[in-house]
Length: 90
Image (cartoon, one colour):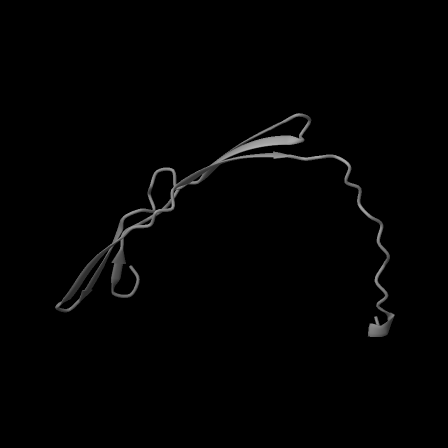
């Protein structure tokens, strides 16, 4: 219940499957959003005295994504100097 609005319960289920191989350098990921289509077509009702309003809302957020990534080697962290904070009185 929200003010004079009545909104039915809504929800969505998202999931991700990830498979890593080649010595943790390669990854395949399958992601699904709102897989049961639960966030779509919820109804809202307003009842204020003689004012009656029924509204159906449709959200289309379902999706499926397949991605592949590969990490190339050779990255080394660069040495950095400490920041001179003496001018700030620290």
